[in-house]
Image (cartoon, rainbow, N blue to C red; front, side):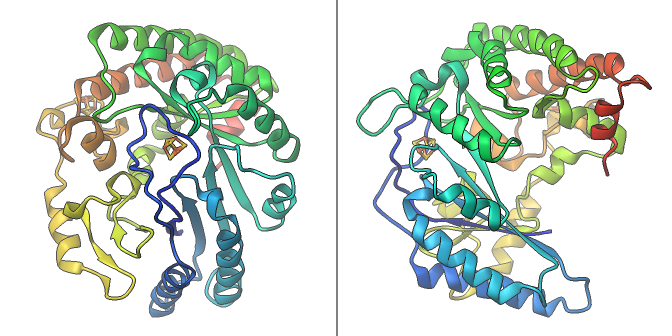
Amino acid sequence: MKRLTLVMTHQCNFRCRYCVQKHEDVHMSRETAFHAVDLLAEQIRREKNLPRPKVQISFYGGEPLLAEELIKEVISYAEEKLLPDLAEEMRFEITTNGLLLKDEFLPYAKKHKIMLALSHDGLGQDFGRIDREGKPTKERVDEVLKRMLSYFPKTVIMMTLHPEMVSSLAESIKFFRDSGVDCVNLTLAHGAKVHWTEEHQAELISQMETLARYYVEWNKGDRRFRFAPFDVKIRNYILGKNSDDRMCHFMGDKLMVDVDGRFFPCNHFIGNEEFLIGNVADGPDMDKIQSLDRQRVEPETCRDCGYKDRCRHLCACANHGHTGSMCQVSRLQCEYEKNVIRLADQAAQKLMKPDNTCFLQRMYKD
Ligand code: SF4
Ligand code: SF4
């Protein structure tokens, strides 16, 4: 799979408490976006001896739907340029806060295989995710979620957990399930604006324990509910390899292009000159790429850990976000990983039964 992510704008109609964006009025031009697609096409052409890849183009922000018209132009251009000779299949992905999602966009998204993911913090939405005018957003985003689910029953929720809202984590996930959602991803908020105390961390583990019990209930028989932290750990075990590593595309098969055409390894590093690895005009800076790759080593504290084949300790973005270093894992992340693995294994023991075919099929799907 070849992945290209285009940062369409730094501006946003929200002002989330934990956001790391500066919300400047800078937007990607048509020329830059098309240039990035051209570079991707050239790269695939150079690899002509390999089978045609699947290609995924993701639109990112700020709020990407502020650039809805350009997104549509890029999709048409990319489909024309890559299909059918260069790409076997094309998928698109937009992560949105939802409020700019128009009804007319939903059939368009279906036609062009756009996966829409909704950022929603559950019961913590009004605490963490306020609009530009400082107003709460939950009621309005809940309405958007209903509309999305009627079109895309598999709508994915991207939830960010602020430490102040940790005590409502399990009930937030239950809220999503009760709303008809069957897939939730969870990220722990990090960065300079966020502080996880010892008490928050203890509460986080307690909430995950409650969630593990819900997860077992919600995945028996024909029912299913994907809670990504547990799903991923169970799949890691089955596959015998760490799919978390594949999720971190740092210096891998994903190119992230900022509004002005500069390349960064992934969204967390956007705008950070230390991680600038080229631009659309000059192409990738191979020396810088190799130098960053050499710096990305296994954290010293993880070398002898029995969990390391199933843990996200190599995720450069999560490490840098929590500790300021790509190669240092925060205590929060380490404890969280250990407990998620423990709880996922306990849940799997209860769910991996011969008659629980729905769950087994999901876990053994590849
Ligand atoms: S919606 Fe995303 S980009 Fe906008 S303020 Fe919230 S976290 Fe930042
Ligand atoms: S559980 Fe902690 S020590 Fe073990 S690999 Fe993960 S981050 Fe490192």
